[in-house]
Image (tube, rainbow, N blue to C red; front, top):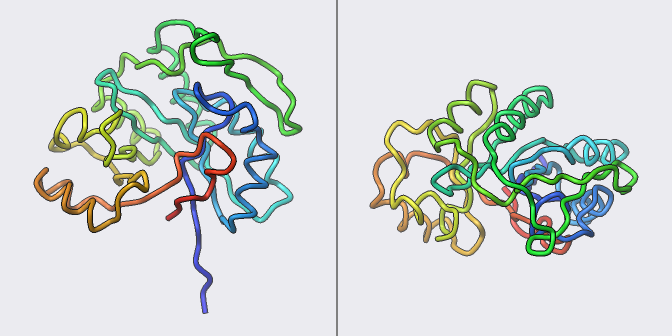
Length: 223
């Protein structure tokens, strides 16, 4: 009998604004192992700098780490971009940084720290990672696909930063790989939400991940 494979591919580290400073690589990996996950995706807001440290922290564990970014489009829609190739991931990060205006306000959004595999702070990211990029939704998906990544619309059942909550529909021809449910609704309930939105909404696979900003949330939802 084959064992079920559990993946939570939407986890934030302490680099993400509004994330917990306890979300360091060692804590994330330990939480994922306790939940019996086989794979995790590190998807900070508009950045990927903590991915290598999480992967190194997981080297002695039986858990795979995929690198990702949760990108905010100019329409303020969140798109998960996932890669199994860090070179491609950091090509995308450069595109995001080149189109991300503003500086972080630590008083408002907290410190955005880059961590090594030993959970030590090695740098601080001063960009406004919580902000929207100047990249359109279509352009983000186009870049992700050109780099052989997966493009997944984040938490489509939520009003805030969800593609349906913001636009009311999924643009025809947008080459998404899947739609993510935040866990607030079941797949059946999501089907009822998506059905009126067009054929593409019905045809795309549905996945669900934790969108974890705190250790206790890691693995709350998995696919």
